[in-house]
Amino acid sequence: MATGTFKAEIDFSCPICQDIFRNPVMLSCSHSFCKACLLRWWSEKKIHKCPVCKRRSSKSDPPCNLSLKNVCEAFIQEQQKASSRPEVLCSLHSEVLKFFCLDHQQPVCVVCRDSKTHSYHRFGPIDEAAEDYRRALRNLLKPLRDKLEHFHKVKLIWNDSAKLIKEQAQQTEKLIQEQFEKLHQFLEREEATRIYAVRKEEEQKSQMMKTRIEDLSREISAVEETIRATEEELRAEDVAFLHKYMTAVGRIQQRPLPDDPQLESGALVDVAKHLGNLSFKVWNKMKHKVSYSPVILDLNTAEPNLRLSPDLTVVIHQGKKCRAPKNPERFEDYFTVLGSEGFDSGTHSWIVDVGNNADWAVGVIGESVQRMAEIQTGYWRVQRNVSSNHHSCVLMLHCVS
Image (tube, helix red, strand yellow):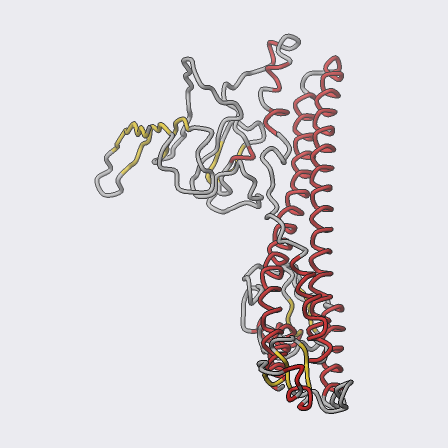
């Protein structure tokens, strides 16, 4: 029985001290630790990061994980009660239930074992049987736990995306207002129309993200309830646990693992649509005050190290990653940003100002290329490299079909 108790304690153990949680606190990444263990860990570090996933913590005094604290205290009390419980007797012979019939899948006493009912049956010690079935149930529970942890991570990403949608909408609205201020009073109607479009898209996409987060929250709650009910049965006595084992297995099997939630393309505010060539679109009213840029960059495709100008016509490598969600349109491993509009035919030309940059590359790329993997095909590129040793320049046209 000591082995079974030890394995049950693993579910309630602090990742740092490996003991049952005492006064647990929870970080924003959803990992929990004993408060004393976490503070001791942080005292040796310059930056407060999660000891498990290494995500930086914004709080030096994380909140108490009250639900985990209550569960751990209840678990300790249950252990204390279990050590003082009387042994369960057979309802037929009033003997202690010491064996488990592998054929009938039920606890039996020594008299039951020798009876005709169990002739030629296979038996095992009841504590070994209970541990075997607990292990089997935990194995069934593990994919559900892993899925729940993944759901929590996805929810964090989606929460960040929901915040960014509002920030994008607010920034876009501000830039629209600044441009329209230059067009005087008769452009107020146009300005109102553009702002309405931004707010309408924000409302639609925020509602979509809210709905998805609510759906994911309901799925998380359902998975948590299944885990909670199963864990409650895992803490039961061997006999009671074995009586309810098949019910617990059925409960888990009736809840198949759902597919991983995915953020669809186009979930973010289409900033380029609202800001791209805004002045040109009202050119018929203010021709002498507007300018036109043939390429408007798509903010939602920019690699996180790149920074775009407010009018989305200039891109700068800023040397450090900005906060950007992993939306499907975004490049992850290449310093790349796309134009907001593509083409599949015709003749096109642009003048690109590369400033004083020694190394640069500009070209065209297929919309279907993988954004979060190595790009080996599907692009044309003109590139300039300057060798630091010989100060020579190379102009290269790189074509991969």
